[in-house]
Amino acid sequence: MLIFLLMKKEIHPKYYHEAKVKCACGNSFIVGSTMPEINIEICSKCHPFYTGKDKMIDTAGRVERFKKRLQKTSAKRKKNERKSPPAGDHPKGEKNQILWIR
Image 1: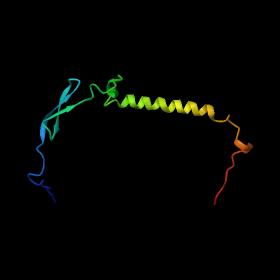
Image 2: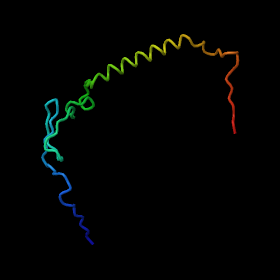
Image 3: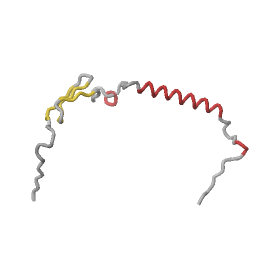
Image 4: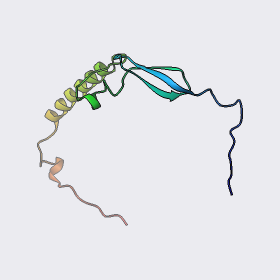
């Protein structure tokens, strides 16, 4: 028994079998899409994973903000390490206890 599923008419977008994709690096290729032309920033010719080259793409200074935040936290961590008591010394001379709760 053959069952044919029919698509509803006039509800689907037009499909372009030869849509052109253009990359910012200058590479272009053909794919099937609902858009006739697609502009992209990174493709397989310029992506660091495929090329093995490190490439930094910064959007709105996110990398600088992350590095600045990382420096602040590392400075705070170093400052707190100096204030903490030496390892093995516990306040009041007590050792850590393990409590079992049932």
